[in-house]
Length: 436
Image (cartoon, rainbow, N blue to C red; front, side):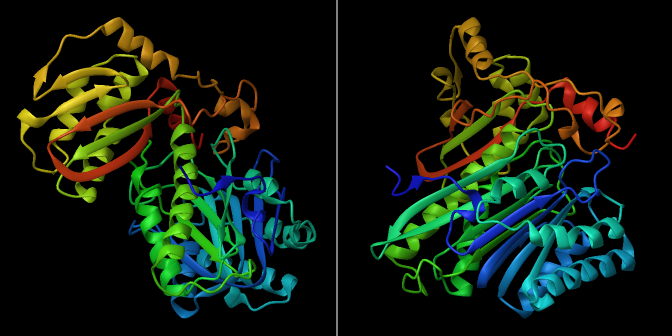
């Protein structure tokens, strides 16, 4: 049983944080497009960023900031323009964004971290940003997490938010998070942004280590379409406002905090996978029997990312051969005679041998997890990278009802999970019309 409870409040649930989200005019739709998270005091900051060689200006900016200074006060995020592959002017736009916000908050620009999302190759609309920042700061609120979560989405159909609370040294400690992401999602981070706040006191090196490990078990274990983005960023702040003793090394308290941090990241990661462009269901792949956890996650990610597996799930086809093929090409050695595959409660393959199973019932199992994706005419919305302009028939996120694929490859102690979604006709429609 988890040693924490879910609470409301998102990134403003932890003590000492305010957030805001406004419409600044960055998106063609006129929907919210500028978000801000602020800690009342200087907070320890950590980040995990895209592994792509083509990076947005905000990614390089944040990496340099966190290398020079392991603390921050604010995270500013614009939606609508990725500011990636925009050259030196894109770098200047990022720097000016931080300077404008720093002046409005009356803090040093070094205490500001940046994130952007939108169309690659497009600079931030700086005139809109300049006029929007004063309004954004004026909108900061201790209940502003939902507004911030709604201002960072693009092709997402739903916002992603979570907050958890535990007890350390007999005092409540909270971690909250918001995220965006729906397409261009693949392990090693992808077009996704996630912002996490915490009110525990943690040393900078330990907080970074915790975040990196949590990312490997969450955001680096999801896939939607096999594409990795230029902008993905996971940024976490810990401001110490819970007034608990500082955690400076691993031990019982650190393990408890890291477990809760991982749970927050996994919830947000699964929400992103469930909201995959065109997706109708969440897929969870569970792998056991490898020599270590890394190998298990590698097999799980390969299966979750297989276009053939994803297409079969969309077609409600219990085609276990595609699962076996994906496991076999994952780059992890195992004996074929040890392979076992289950789909939900249906045992399909055992000891490398196919079994008889009720194909109709297995197909019905796949159907029960599905929720139809709304068909949206991107051209009609005049909003090429923002599906949130049409909120009709929005799917409900059922993170508690995934399609479960369980695979065992041997008797090793390694275990791992990955999350993905099915591949539907609408994924092609959305991305075929993305900038037209």
